[in-house]
Length: 538
Image (cartoon, rainbow, N blue to C red; front, top):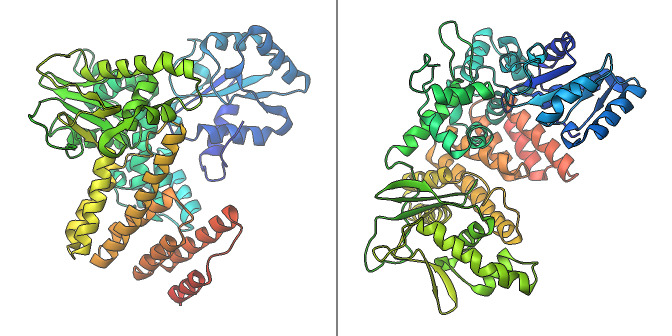
């Protein structure tokens, strides 16, 4: 049972006391993503020592093995059983029945769920949120400085006491300009924005995300518009109790509003249109492929926009391989080596053409006909995405914007270069084909991550030249989130802190660098770095 360290969780003692005060045999920690549930479980194990044990009940599939595990815990006088995951729904009532006197089972949950007999054993999402005092304590733990009561109230209000976004904001900025920040300002911090996107919004199914975009920020009256979307929020506990009407968390509301603005221009905000070469005629059909981050594949035409059908994972791999290959094309052997690298010849022969047929049907979306060009071509032994179709591919646009920014910077047009590189930064939603781990994906992922890091470093350097130091800090911090071992970037951040007269932040940045280098590589900073640190502190 792997847990993160819990010493940076000021809410731990309060929540442990609350758990221990409950009489129910089952205790469910029902909290939002990033609310600290895992740390609470770790702390519970640590506090009770031999009288507590980790029990991965989600892996227990039968009555016999579950009862054996519970009996073994009783033999060594274990009072607290701490699950690393919620037990299967059909085993939950059984676990309650089979617990021996004095035993209690504590487990995390992201949804309401559970039998109706459990409400007394639930730690609800509202109790998982930090108080003003705890927000100030977290600030002190991360920065070493004290936060005023007014600043604590303001920061806790902007985040609703949501632990992980608050921690990410403080860690990323060192606390600079946070005391009066609102939810919109916090979303400008890359780590906070990525958390909301990947850990919260992308946890919803696509249709549910679309439903949430129409949800009002306040809980609507029964029967009013938005009631269905609020049922989703209810299930996850993603709301804040209010005296008049419950509210959506401010950060979630701000993230949804940002997504609405992004979609307004054309239904879905997409990268600049990529055409491999001019075709003989244009077509209203547009394919948008998002390869950076969680994969996206959508088709837009005169009938509207729809998700493409990817029930066959390998057909999407073929499409992604073509879309990220030079000329948007590849030969049969290249596709086999990428998508079927370990399969025998008979398996490949049995699956290759059905996979390509599924890909064609998915791209055509039931609209195959003479009035529309085929999106996938096969000519002279080469598979190719049809250049007569409009392809919008974020990975290609990402590369193009980086090159365009370099050309602009080389010509001395620094403001235009900065704006172009900012657009490239916004396109990078995460690692290439997140969730796929094939060898060809890993190779291309590493290439895009290198490009992304180079982009952030170059953008930070450019902002320094332009005197836009706060934006330079944002770019450098984002680079360090990707790779903490970039010593030159740590130095650049220290230099910017020194210009602000914040020697405390210079020292903290240098200490962080020393710790990371020692833990990861077992080496101290370069002598030049140490000399620069002492110069800045003089």
